[in-house]
Figure 1: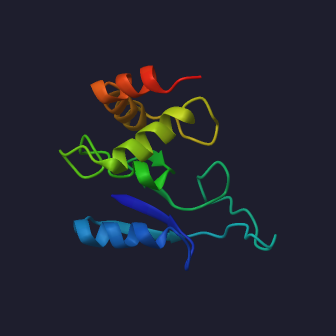
Figure 2: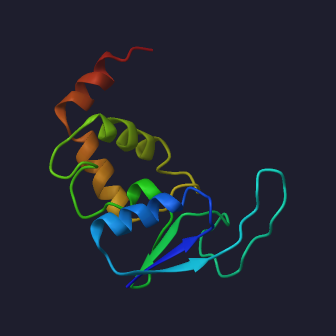
Figure 3: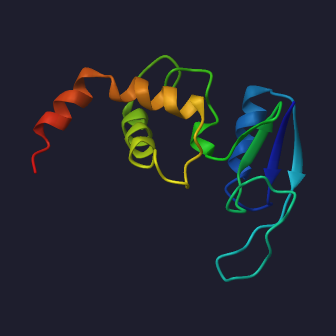
Length: 129
């Protein structure tokens, strides 16, 4: 079962929306996070390495990049490649070596699919500089 680590009135609310749309069974674990104004505190129950939300855990696999949580389909909109994939695929590629992005097979496979497209190779050849 999926556990959603959530702080009320935060971006993790969109994951509740998604899980409800999918009809997926899940539980919510409310956690505290630091706020922009410096308030709040890191919660030891939160598995996010930076103490943020949203985070899901599914059978022991922790994913903390919310745009990577739709991992069953090849692209963001399912079977169809879209502008969302250009945006997210290239962003994930840019941050592939950063500690800010989790190293997971789901993200790695997704980036590989996106950058393997012929249009990506053409864009790289034309970018100049």
